[in-house]
Image 1 (tube, rainbow, N blue to C red):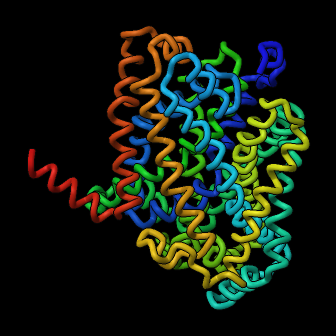
Image 2 (image 1 turned 45 degrees about the vertical axis):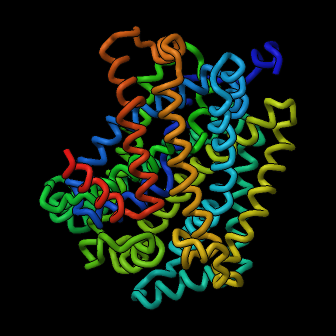
Length: 473
């Protein structure tokens, strides 16, 4: 790409717009359904404190690193890493660029299926379909949606091609305008839902659950779960932050921006707890229910609570906004790469969307006509997993942790002091610089490696290995 072309590349119109886009990239369905049920499974507030610790120690330094890589190259993830290799970095670091476009396009193919459920449930809630339903009725509604191939294809396609349309319009006219509407709306709706839930639900038990830590419930398993959730929630290793960093002006503080992204992401996750748990406790539901809590269990409460139609409708609008802000961040890395190659943004947005749509059709079919097809059943890690579950596990538990590990290793061991000082604004030898370098050089790689081992060999294997190591020392 010529220097003249680079000068014409889009940049964020303001720091606040960038922050909204980056926060939207991180904030997604994981904050609104995964965080609450994982916190519920691991005892609530003690787990949350450990999670916040990992966000501070690992999350913020790694967000800083991804943004620094992106702004240094001012290109897509692939072209940025190629540019850095030409400057003398080892060619192995190109892997970061390629994984950073592979993850989003694969993730988009199945994420939009779940996002489509959120959009469909807006109308179900608004039309009062959940009124006075029981567990069997709610389960039947959800199962009917999964069994109806045309319905799944329709909502999946609507969500995916809405994302494509936004990205095709460019950074300023599409991406920026979308996040300026969605992010403020997301926070307003979430705050309203949290206030309403706390005033009509079981607020006393919620406060005790979320704000009164019981460290006796904090097991080694819970600590590892908090580590994995911190990486997952902040979208570290996905590729969106490197891409968004490429559009950043040089005068924007990366440490401050990384802190704001992490704080906002954690704030959303905590607010989701205050919006969900009062309802869960008030209507005798299980806080550790799992992913089905959102689409199968909460609608039962929406059908019983005062104002349930409004609450349920706003809740699924919230989910849809969160999902759309994430899918935008997933599609942009691949399209940005094509644009760097001189291709038309509009054509490449639709071309990339069709790739995701074609892969996503198999994800749709895995809930019905291909439900019994387990392609990697012979591999213990994938035993019993259908196509959707196989893709989800591969992206979330294999590719993202591996890419996050590579980014940590690059930042800690390969990134020059000159590049780090230039992008982070820390003087070499300063306390801030030393803390960032220790985190990316030692703490983050070790923590992520433990997460990868946990995903591959299981949490019991990792706990056993840690016990053996601790016994030796």
